[in-house]
Length: 296
Length: 144
Image (cartoon, rainbow over all chains, first blue to last red; front, top):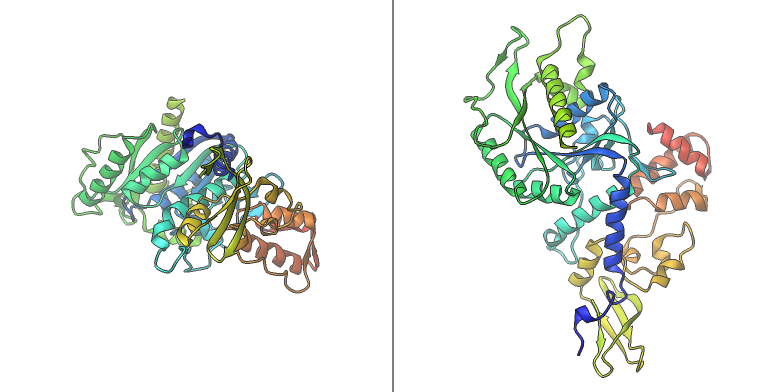
C-alpha cells in the first residue's frame, strides 16, 4: 500500500493551496510597507498601546506614512486611542480600506467594529470548548484581515501586540522574519521580569529586536517642570541585554487625551516649552528610524 | 488528508462534500479505477479544526459555480454555509450585484459593521439602491 508522501496533492481538498495563497496575499499586501515593527512587551499595562499610538502620531507629524495594526483582537484599544471608534473599515476598489486618525495614521483595530464593552467570541464546536480553538481562529482572523487590507505605500506599519511573553513571540513569528521588534517596559522589577521572558521567547526567531523603551520613566511635574520618580525604585532596566531606545515620562494629560482619541502633539503650544513626554517620544522616534535604516 | 483505495492502490478522488448535519460534514471519495466510493463523516471537532483555518473544503467546481457577487454560501461551501445568512437590507434598501460583491469580498469579521455603515450613509442621502456611488460616499464619510 502506498504511503502519504507517495501520493501527489492533498487529497483534493485544496487546503494546502489555500493556506499558501493566503500567505502570498498577505505578502502582496505588505509589499508597500517599508518597515514592519511589532511593538510588544509581554507585560500588560505598561502603556505599549498608548506608546504605539503616540509614536505613530509623532512619525506622521514628520511626514512619515504610518499605519497601525491592532493585533489585540480581544482587547483592542487603537480605535479609541486613534479616535476611529464607530468608523468601520470599508470595501475599496483595491481592498479593504481602514479609517485614519486626525494625523492621517491608518488604523486597523477590532475596536472599530465592536460595540462598547463588547468582546469577540470564538465559539467552539461544542459548549465549553471555545478555549481549544481560540488561538487558531484568532490568527486565522488576523491573517484574513492582513490579506484584505489595502495599506498602500507606508513607511512604517506599527503592530500593537497583545500581552503575554509567549504570545509576543507567536505574533512576531506570524508576522514574518522581516518584522522588527520594539519592546516596552516600565521601571519595575516585575515588568522587567516579564519583558525578559519575551526576549527569551524571541531568541529562537530570526527577527531583529531593536531594543526597548522604558515607559512611565518618572512623571513630568506640571508644577516645577522636572521629572520626578513614579515608582518606588526607579531601577534601570539592566539585565535585559538589549538597547534602550529612550525613556518616556508619564504625563497625566496623556490619559485625558487618550480617552478622547487625540494625539499628544495637539497639546503643542507654539509659545510654551515642549512637554517632556513629547520630547522623549520624539527622541524615541528618531532612534527607531535610525535603527531601522541601519538594518536595511 | 488523502484516501487510498486498498484493492486498487489508487488515490481516491474527492467527489462531493455536504453538510450532513450541523457541525458535521459528509465528504465523499471515489476510486477512479474501480469506482468504489466511501464517505468520511467528520465530528464537530474535526469540522471546527478545518473551519478554524479559514479554508474551504470541497471540489473546486463548487466554488466556481457561485456567480460574481453571490455569497459564498450559495456555492455550497460547507463551512461558509454554516454562517448565518446575510440579513436583508432594511427599509427597502437594495444592493447592486457589484456593490454586494465588493462587500462580500471583505473579511466576514468586519462585514456587518461595514454594511451597517454603508446602509446608514445610503439612508441619510436618500438612496434606495446601494451602488458604487454610495460605497464611495461611505468611504468619504468615514474618512478614507
